[in-house]
Length: 292
Image (cartoon, rainbow, N blue to C red):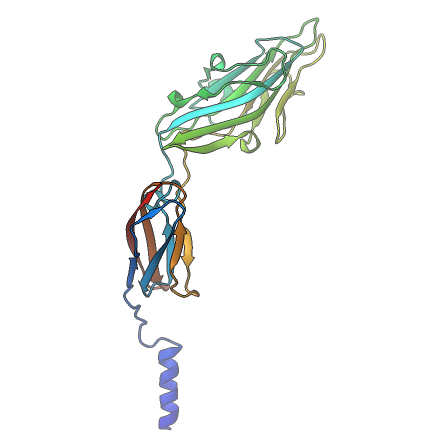
């Protein structure tokens, strides 16, 4: 009977947790023989302790621990695209921006929004295919906690001659911050909304490679038609990313690394250990000087 009770007690402790599981304190240290290396020279980081997981941030651009949660930065916001005009009827395309459009492409919401005409900032085709707009600075349109909608507006009236046809390609909006370029949106992922105020049977054609409005022939109905991109956060940046170099199933092995450019780098190691009840983290940082 005593033997049975002993077995039952072991089962209670080991399986059912009759005593609350206590997590060992997380212990973690990082050492390296050298704190100064040459470009291309391998450096070895050695670890001691009991972490389950380690994430490595080299300190290089895009791999800095201090920016792992950053999602915005007030850099230089720019855009560009190319255009192609057919039937040579200039002044039929406008490029606009709004900070209070609702995102609903219908007549009420388009009319009630405030649109800034920024056509004079871009170069439009006068008949040459893939005419570059130029790199257009739109930083002045940025406001805290506000996105910007960019739109192309086509207008052409009934006349004895054929209407204009416009094609737009290579549309992209970027934010350059701390010498890094972050893509905010491009033509393929801009989620273009389309609406024709007058001639409901004719709207912009949208594909992954271009926007196109084909005007009608002589005496065709007039058009006042819009194509509007999804909201653009002109301060958008991506989080810096670390490299997972250990998980719970791996041994605590050294980390070898080679820097490819000179500079002073703050190398960070984020260690963690835990279960569903307790989770601990420790950050260790080492400054490495990389010489040419």
